[in-house]
Length: 458
Image 1: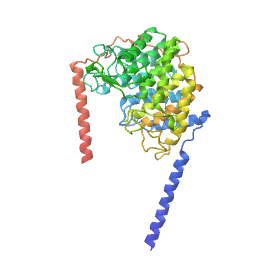
Image 2 (image 1 turned 60 degrees about the vertical axis):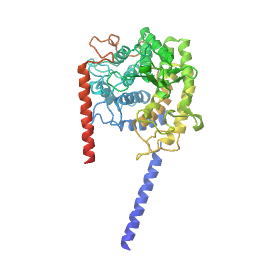
Image 3 (image 1 turned 45 degrees about the horizontal axis):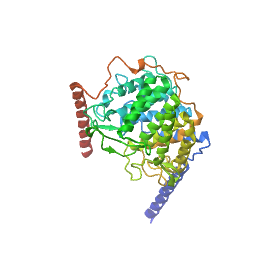
């Protein structure tokens, strides 16, 4: 009888602890007042900590700038872009030193964000996302590196020109391939996001530097994407890409939000710089085409149309909504007539999606993949936290100045237009030595994976 009584007491204690824990989590749920700047900043602070929970690069055994597995190197570059904007929108400098170290640790030997450690996986789109972040550092007047380090604008220019010199007319009459090196899977695929990266970098550099050469590259890229059929001008939908082996005739018509978002922002940058009606119309048309990424039946909540409803979004795709929010925010400032539409998208997503989704995990503020479902969907990750952070912090777009340029207060120095005399890789054709080096790296990775599998089995 005493034993049973002890068990009953223990059970009741456990029940109380679980109940208190549940109530604590409910109390931690974020209630965001979209009309209150402090409330928005507080939510951004919570989500920024959620992003950094996945970073161990500055710890023993970690790699500076890289996030823990399963997040690829490209997403690290994207995440640092989110953290840079977090500083700019909120004024919180907590992570600025870590951010600077992460960026400079990954520039590679030629300052083109092609570190040797990524040679077996890096594509043009991967490089572009690191380029976006250093370009934002120049536009936001983020603290310049010391004089013995490469500068933000210089890095942006080098990234752009290293990509531009891979423009390939041998297949599909132009465009960038997905992968940089021939030995990587995907080299025979020309995808929209790689070309979107080139386009957006060109547009941003044109506005920042005033150099019309970049406008020419932006026009070339837009025209090619349209002519090859990756852009459907009936609806302003952007499709994924096509194989170069059949001259890009069999287009994969998946629609990803970051493709459309990159072209939206690029068009807005070019409109802002040129004041051209052409770029103004293109900005408006792409904005209208974004309707497929917002569910009116759920109050206008943002979602990834190609994968989210069927719960098939992979690790990369779980972060795509972050870039949609980021680039919509830039567009709202650069093309002011778009502000009301974009701000409504951000508000509707925050109120009807994020506040009820980001209620999971042990901390009670972990965000799920889908904001369409009621409550937390029991998923978590870096991409989910980035998406919430970017959407919420872009509610502050009317609290900060527009991206700076060299003539409006931008302080980052350039470097010979990005055209360094020391040869960075400019084509997808590599030497036997490079191929052998990549093969050695691949063998090491495979051996490590096999060793890990043996250890787990044992």
